[in-house]
Length: 611
Image (cartoon, rainbow, N blue to C red; front, side):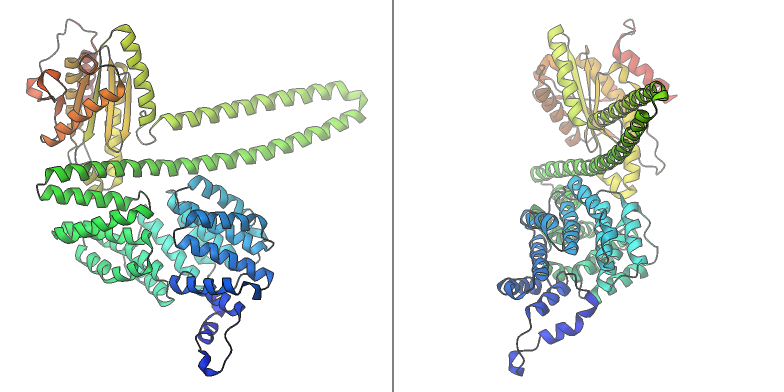
């Protein structure tokens, strides 16, 4: 049984009356309505009411018992006990005799799947839930499903779809609480699309609306959006004041997902202000809270802030520890972003295949009808049978072709980095191990070059992710231009790339890396910033043919280049211990009488690029 929010104000006042007035305690049904009204506005009171209702469960009619079961699952989800909540909601979604409860359970499952990063399951559940939306008469429930659709599409990076669903909700003139949700989702999508209104007034009005009905979490979520807007407008002090003023409210709500956003942003802003102590405190608290939230962009920012603090204090050992954690968190976050995009594409493809399967079944039904007609038309039997067989054959060929195309698409998605078009880390590893095994059998030398773009996170922060993506694509394009001479080119994650060259000694690989470094320096950007990279080089002649060992030695040289000032090439040389650094002026041109060597052809390609 779904109870509308608009009829609860008077009931809430009545329930607060004490027994000293001579009135009997409120009925279980009244307490259930109060719990519905405050479930997100006052989590502590809500949990208390649900506990009371559990003790009085037998006083409720069957339909309201189902409603109580839903609220118990809601309380578990709000407390972060997602697996327990999922189990209860699945049971309600399948077996509840109340259609509205089945629908609400499906919508809440979508929300939990999104929060726990199970986006494929969430999108599938959304599709199963929206199928029944036309059967739901209660307009608030229909809007509830659209709210979850907007939320999960924002989470998988489909912000235009998320904004579309949010605007549909607002057009329906929803109740105050639902309008508060929709405004938050719309502004969140606009922030990520970079189309927030220039004026602060719409966001301020949304914050006031949420605060006026006691929705503290949503009000502060909108304040986070406003603070990020101010950061983009260089209003740092205003953003700090806003976040610090409302931080106690966020901490009191005990909602880790929002707390890490507040504290990570405060850590970044306090570092920029120069308050190292406050920045370190907020960043450390963000890391501690992230254990219950998962790998988020806020965690990446927190580790970066801790790394920058240690670097500012000249504590190189601590800085290296935090830099590695920052790099790992950044790679994990980027992998999760790709996983979200892939989940959306998978479910979209599944939906398309279901639609095509329905069409195919319709076609088969039509063929069956045609076959029956054939039985009654003896004079035309032969001709119609031939037509039927041809249609079946063509249909089989067509669906076989479509299936093959789908398989090839998923193979390409699994092997290729979506942004740059080069191999992803997994495919590069498989390809590299195969090539090294071939070199080992043939007795050929192989070399590995790894490089990392310098200060790439600062490029993203200062000029935006769009500028960073353009740089990554240009770097990959340089790699593709010399791919005839390289056996495998891959993006290992974030701004880190590698390429493996067979039948190539350490000297030739070093020259190729230096030429690549110079081409990166020549990248022209519309914003005017310069791009540089730090390189590491190692050879199987010194390390062996195991890819893991080869990558480990090359990675050490890459970090050596980073610590020696960046924008340089460091080469692993066992005779010198850890390695040696190579500067451009130390490289001699190759002997051009071997005109077919990979280095000659690579330099020739780079010269053509330069012209």
